[in-house]
Length: 419
Image 1 (cartoon, helix red, strand yellow):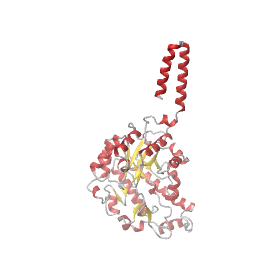
Image 2 (cartoon, helix red, strand yellow):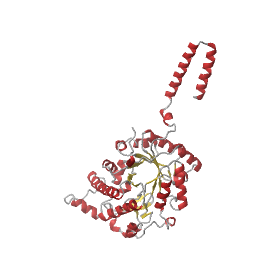
Image 3 (spheres, helix red, strand yellow):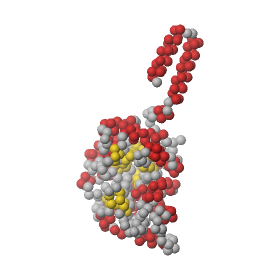
Image 4 (cartoon, helix red, strand yellow):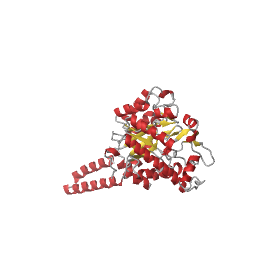
């Protein structure tokens, strides 16, 4: 393009020597018309990709203790937050409930589990969450703790061993659910004592820390193959004139009944959070609706319609770009965009799955093209440490994504959907 413009200028000068002013005016008009035609023929993406600073944009990352040691040492954590700030991130989601333990000192956990804190050596003698809140806020980062495991726990955890009556099972009586290579069990989300324990943990965090919000995902549901424990079956029969639940775990009525019970609990938790701290945001980061509802009984679409979600970060981790794009186009996603900030969770990599920075940049652009509130990356360690590309190249790539600082899109402080 630069060569073309230079040629036009040189051509005009040459013509000026040989032709009249009237002819020169004609050439100038012709030149400008040609330039406009060329510019308009460029792909729209080339224009959209020009650097811009949105009024607000979620730029988040999840901090977990799985395949990552960022939380296990004070200075390492402080340096990580510093780096995120320098690269114009504005939000962190640190895990606080994982592997059957809290990652902060918890009186609630001590009473029920027998330990107030995850036994990992790097967490002892510290309050990791307090450090993140303090250091994060100094750097202007929004801090939203992530209640990662929800109702799930390791099969060999103290929680599972100390409270076996709290666990639910399949119709054949088995309890173990595989997550990768790990054996998991699930607390029964329909039992009042389980509900009270989970709610107490959540309220404890909201009450004791100056957090900006708290996040749940679809582990706040239940695998649809479960729910056949004696307590739940008796409750179902009580509400169905003695009729037992379907032996088919995918039976629509049986799925709906359990999902509605979880929705009732979500409403109760939302109310408890707001009663403790009115300006604490309730964030949810689920899988797409049909997966979340059919496989984990977490009906986030209904939660959103009921006003129980104040930030939605939809996890879209597909390898296929076309599938990734299609997930952004579903009606329930677009509907949510008109009510609350909806952002997209993008996979930055896994321990055994490296993702090139160019692929990440492409997905960010697809999200921006559709006016989402922002993006969050799973997970911190794969931003630049667990990668086949150099840390310098990765950080440079994220600098290209987030060229200037911008505000977090907060529903409680006047966020409005983009037109």
